[in-house]
Length: 289
Image (cartoon, rainbow, N blue to C red; front, top):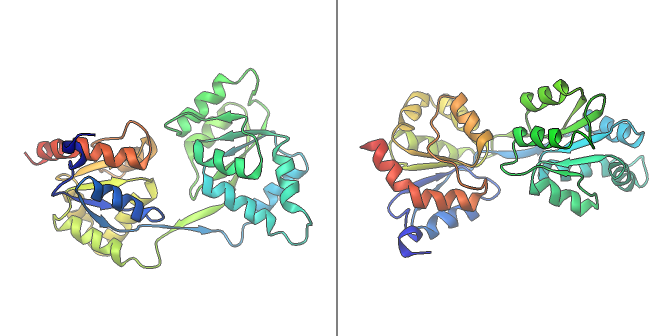
C-alpha cells in the first residue's frame, strides 16, 4: 500500500471502544499514523443462573428441536461450557454435540462456524456477509425447499440482547421459536477509560470514532448520561467522523440519533481501520467545512 494511505490517520485522534481486542485495534490505528484513544466499553458476562440454556440442552437431547441458529462465536462456546458443567450428567458435552449433529445448524458468520468446528459440529447453512439478521432470513428463504421453516422448532442462541426482527421473521415463516440467552453485556469493571473517552468527545478532542458492536453505543451514551455530558457528546458527533463495522451497528447508531459516515467493504476490524485511514480525512473536512 502506498505511503499516503498508510499514514492516512496521521495527526488524527481516533476513539477505540473495543474491549477484548483493544490493543490489536490500537496498533492498527497507530500503524496508519493515528493516535488511538482506547476506551474499553463492555465485558461479556456469562449468565451464572441460566435455566434457559440448560432447558435448551435437555430438550435438544430429547429431539425437541429441528434447527439451531448460532449467532456468535463467544455465545456458542459459552453454551457448550454451560452444558459441560452439568456435573450430574456424565458425558454431557458429548451428548450435546451428538444432539447438535442430528439437527439443522445455522451459523451467522465465521465466528460461530469456527466455534462449531471446534466442537466437531458441521454447519448446514452459513449466513453470508455482512452476517445480519437480514442475510440470515434471506438464506433461509433460499433454502426453503430443503429446509422449510413452517412448523419447525427453532432455537436461537442470543448474544446479550434479543433480536426482535429475527425472531419475528422466523415466526412469520411459521417457525416455533425458542430463545436461548447465553451471556449478557455489562460495563467494564473499570469505567475510568470510558469516562475519559466521553470527556474527550465532549471536549472536542476526538476526530474519528469507530464502533465495532452496537453495545458500545449504548454504553457510551449511558456513561455520558451519568456524567451529564450526553448533550455535549451528541453535539460532538456532528463534527467527528463515525465509522460503523456494519448494518446492525449502523442501525443502532441511527436509532439513537447519531450519524454514520461510513461502513467498511467487509464487516471486519482491519477493514474498518483501513477505510478510516483512506476516507477519514476527507469526511472530516466535509463535516467541519
